[in-house]
Length: 323
Image (cartoon, rainbow, N blue to C red; front, side, top):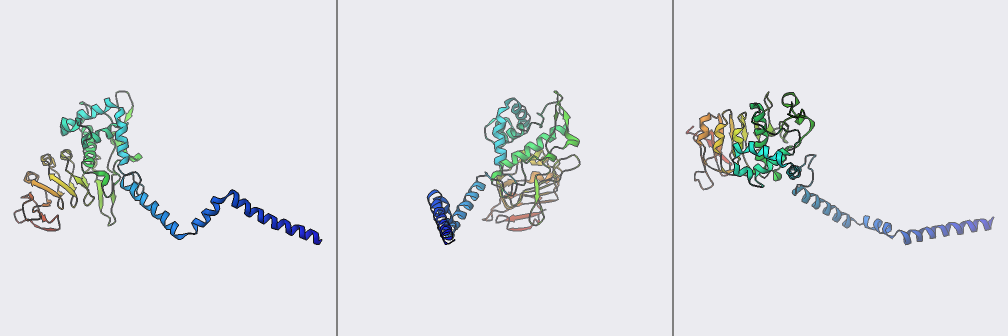
């Protein structure tokens, strides 16, 4: 029995030795990995690299943030739209009426990008001269909102606000589905859901749609909009509220905004907009706010009907006594 125990002991000892040699000889990576993972400095370094890589991808618009893809999704669709040149031409012809041929025909303009995105949506019908007024407005509205996005560097907005997302409910089947000449079912998309509530519960984005599904609110204040205001927004006659304060907008307010006869609130303070906007006073806007004075006290925006006039980038505002 002693021999048996000795043999058993020798076997156990040899087995342990063999296992150690086996792992050391055939799995050096696993042994090294265990040592690496026990090094806190190395772990912190790896976590830092992952975090920096994620931030870089987010900045480049290559990664979804909180489940909402940034505008690289729209841009990839824009590139795909080039495959259907005939369809694009139909959209461009309709858009040139409000944007002008130069803006539409020039490559990579906000108008060109917006049209390519629209042309890529198979269910969106190509505009025709025989379209009803409601059908024409649907096209203009979707086109104008897309132009606004591209005109103000939408990819770098603080919040994408679900722009360019097309969930199932984006097709307003109750009022916009129809049969085209080939008896295919087509429908206009709706951007009524391109909005969110901010941390304080305030509406941000576009929406507030009326009973016809038309957008009545544009609320993109404090969202890092950088660029100029597109004239296409002036054709959205259903708008009642336009809030664009505290961004990086420059240039002038387009003359086409005189068409916004139903707008009751227009907030443009806290930007670098300039020029005369008294033409909007014809619409009897109830509450209009703008930067009436620049940083040095010089006139920035001339606005006789502004309820509030601001200066220093919208930081200081006072009631307009001339109103």
